[in-house]
Amino acid sequence: MTEFLNRNLFDSKGTLAEELIASRDYPWELLPLIGDFVAELAERLCRTPGWKMLSPGVAAAEDAVIAESAVICGPSVIGLGTEVRPGAYIRGKVLVCGGCVVGNSTELKNAVLLNGAKLPHYTYAGDSIVGNRAHMGAGAVASNLKFNGTNVVIRNGKTGECIDTGLRKVGAILADGADIGCHCVLNPGTVIGRNTVLYPNLCFRGTAPENSIVKSPDNIVPRN
Image (cartoon, rainbow, N blue to C red):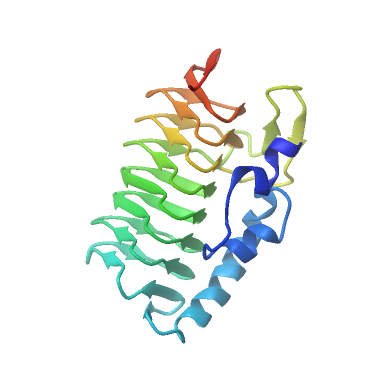
């Protein structure tokens, strides 16, 4: 399971999420911890120069650009140089690190966005981890709940092994540099490797290896 280790998916050093990500081996293990971590981080940052409290439990960097029509519920943290655009809905238990874009009508819940992550248009990411410089195109959705309500499993594309996360809600795990095309649907527990690209309009489940191009679920080629 080494391909699923946090250290092989994300470079969290120097990010606001460094302590959280280093605390566990696998990304799905982080999901139940996000709320408490963000609540404590927000309180600490509000006592730090360059930060302000927008509302109870919501800390934002003073240089963050936040549209008046955006809704941000606590606990949440909005990092340095991040832009939160009109109509964005941040439902709480959300850590948005530095230089990110949370776009118009984008919805986040119990999620971490590492440095430079961009979800610029009509995107949903719940119970998800989005890596550095990862991108979700317009209308892309990280589905986080199976239709039958059973625990989400992580499927290893190489071995066929299924890993029970023990959680009913797990969205997408996007490693650093992953790029999801417009209108893709990522089924619960999807893991996309570093620098891997998904073509638009795909419905994808399971795992995609790093440095790949996913043209369809059955057509994955190396990315040169």
